[in-house]
Image 1 (cartoon, rainbow, N blue to C red):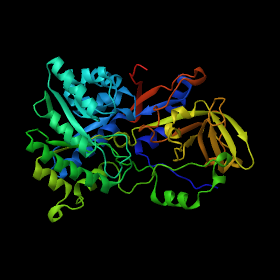
Image 2 (cartoon, helix red, strand yellow; image 1 turned 90 degrees about the horizontal axis):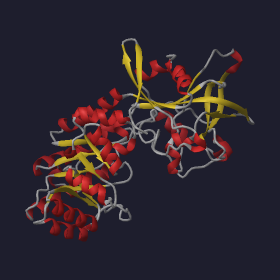
Image 3 (cartoon, rainbow, N blue to C red; image 1 turned 90 degrees about the vertical axis):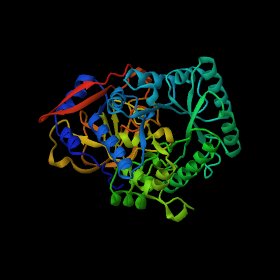
Image 4 (cartoon, helix red, strand yellow; image 1 turned 60 degrees about the vertical axis):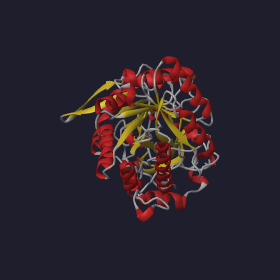
Length: 448
């Protein structure tokens, strides 16, 4: 049997799992739903700001809005004075509607539409320029609108030369020449780096600091760099993750399903601590062993970070109701009232591995004691629509009417792929906040 992968959680979540509210919401909303914890978002944002302050580094935290479509997180970002990272006109519009000022937005993404660039220039948003033709369009728009555009030039990571994001050395030189004397504030540089390697981020950040010095020699402002996101989240304990990795076999998954790889669900350095590690590290080739924080301070360069998943750590979970239990040879296939489109890891040909928590709908006879292995399928007519291929060792035998709670799904999981397939409604989002010894809730205000 596969090893258990219990998710890290919080006292608030554990209290809610023991509350009748989850079953009441399942009954009232007539289907699966997502629970949001805005106070946890606030705490994560404060931790990132504290990491910058501890290092004595001027910086700015931008919430990567693509990580979750809920309105409440963007509203909290606006109140807290965070920036917001957007990549479409829709995301930009939602951020402005939530109260985020235009100058507090950074617009990322490749090959931005003309409409998006136009609004970004008019709102004085910071634009991460990804290509020379995009820079030309920004400069033309700024001239036409009589505005000065704010831009960062995105660097192609030398260690990821096949990335489709960023400008190589020759393109950067050309871009800098085009910025001189143009209606643009060239505020610095950025990069888009896949993965969670702290060393790569430290070394590439140091290179961007050197690029800022070169740009200043041309008379450009160049006083900030963005290292994007990529701050890992620690979902499960080290021992559980090690046991899972060591014991994993095809028979632990329904139909012998295999995957190309998994998110690193245990990370010893995660969230704001990952930022602390990056700032404290000494970049390769740094003179006199100066840390990245020291290089930033010496150069007068501000550090911008754009976490998404890490700001949403423990800020939400997803709830499904068991509507069928089918016995198999030594395990069960559970069917729940939703689809894997509401648990998005399979978008990456992977699996969201932390065990869902079973919240029984009633008392169980002693004979139902587990462990009871079961995978979790969706209420659709697709063989491949599985929320969990892995045979989870549940503590008791699941039954119709029980709830399965997938913890810590706010970051990229709960709505990246959602679709009203089979005309099933999209799961609503419920904002939950403690109110004394109980909880109060409301529906999120996102129009979709």
